[in-house]
Image (cartoon, rainbow, N blue to C red; front, top):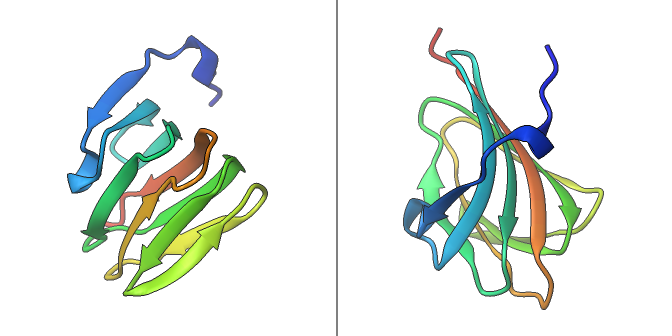
Length: 111
């Protein structure tokens, strides 16, 4: 199956998971997976949240993310992946001067 993020409508997620400002997202969602192409402007964040019934893999396309995972700080840079296993807590913030662009996959583990 192919889909093109360039052809998708952009959704604005205000204060995503309790974060600051807006996350711009183009998403594919079905019963098996959520796939997101997202942009966080400088100063924006995705709030801390726990993946109780799924996991998440985040790939950094451009910019830099400060990630808090289970209370520890990680820096995500272009070409790097961040993985949050099921049962763990994470959030991210764009503390840089340029847009943070990410690609994220959240599989459905409940099937």
